[in-house]
Image (cartoon, rainbow, N blue to C red; front, side, top):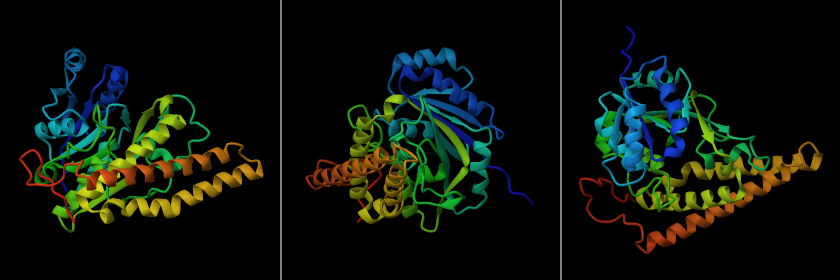
Length: 330
């Protein structure tokens, strides 16, 4: 007898009027899913004017203002707190879901050991992909990068623009860490990495699955293809990885990154140089240089973040409160 398909609540967090047209497309993509969601929840992250505007535009969704601290983690926790379905799926406000997105995510929850499922995030460039921006670096714009699994595979963590969790798992681990993630004055991230690691530690034997067949398309503004943006984002990623390392231990926080640096990036550099040397692609050298520059900036950000952590700039010690159930794990 076939297992019953779980119910799903979809949480979409938004914070700026600049993405109104994109948000409308995202919501529309959820409305037409082959597996209809139980709820579509739109969380407005501390922007009262935007909230009032959306009351008129989205009358058929659950619209709520974030009750957490400003930032993506607080908004996600707000959405999760009012979700009623068994599974909570998260989608960015600039990422349209393929029609079978929810159906493909949900099928893996037949296995009770699966605590979270995510899928591929494909970039949709506002203009053409910059010649210097190799697919190995697509994580910079929040997308799946070359070197990630091509078939459904158990992974350490999911991509924030396309992920889902059992509601009971989020409740068990206390939600997303609001010290991480996008914030107005802190260009940090990696809250998805941290919560996946924390959930795996709290539930030994549980699995997190990445299925590249569950697709969302992520809008990428032209400004995010510049070298300046790439390097700034790489520095922030290094800072974020340092903070996650301080929370969960560097071996857990950097396991996937070590493989990426050892296997994916060297091939990217050699491929770029080869393409340039043979005359097949004159931009090959710039792609190779961008990879090396991004690696250097990420490493620099990580080392700086470790210094800040040791100086206790990142608040990770002490007894957890009701709003902060996470602890440093050694």
